[in-house]
Length: 104
Length: 367
Image (cartoon, rainbow over all chains, first blue to last red; front, side, top):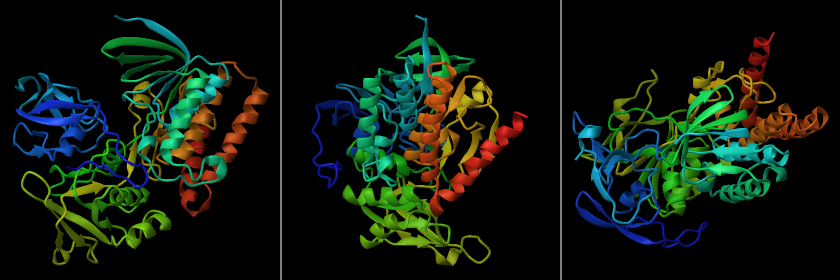
């Protein structure tokens, strides 16, 4: 939907290997090895988590693994930086809804 | 499992500065390791799809990703060892602590070169935490490396070269850029980049800022405003653009945590982006065996980062006795001459003076 398939400098996008992952219970298609955040943005998913106290939405901000705004729970591991974590077949990805260790 | 491994030279950061440093060191016979926390080497080079400026010997006209490929090839043929997905989390004298694929490794080093780069600055305004407000560099990585557009209609805050180049690259990727917004009364970046954006129909609004981003759950509007005579936002000038994404191109700050941890002396330079480790004309910090190169020593661009890396790599090899003083002086002066050229001209002058100030401060310390 929001993938850059054609590009005047870079040429056509390489298709890559398609994988299927689960995001908050919904199945989405992704390209193996791309950052989780990129796969989500490609599907139009912009909210990666809500802040624990006020429930404010947060999405990708720095894209280099420093700001930790885009953390999610991946395969049961909370606080995974989705902008620098490659996506793999069958990952279970959940919005980071609560403080680290409490995330379900 | 823990273990201690020895390398003559350990470089932290596999971007342009770190790779260039490692190539020079390894070519002079140093057993060289480069450690990088990312899963791919090259730092930010592979998202730079524009042609570089400078002279022929600075690879002018060559696109960033081609420079990156060349560096990787050279590092490979020079015999440099590269560890990816490896985080340096501890700095000791001639030792670094590395977390690599879940294992702790202590690496003992003859000399250490820090080439950790810089990170983008943020700016706060109401709504700036909404999903859809992101760093311009993050946008650039998404569109050029991962080939994903993080939005459809963008507003870019900041008209320096990063803001201008990323705006143009957004258009190349098929997005709409509604405006580039600049608080200063003039455009910050090169005229040639600004002209490309204006030719494409995107206005560059100087004397203007973002007063807030609005939207429920994500950005769906950006309110722009002008400054009044008192330098504050004039509420009567507010107007809303129907943007869904904001790029922040408001400068970078050196990533110097490891140098702080090691105990280097620092100096503040607003021109260079913040606190930077003091270093001498060999890129040696105030600590023995610890060098710096690239944006950690002050934010510039990839061409100077590579040259500083080369300088540090040669100097580190010299200090290990791998090359003689005469040869080293010849090699280093060749690099210094090229750095001088890169910092010449109206855009380089400020950086040249700021860098000279760092060398000056360093020399005062050693008296």
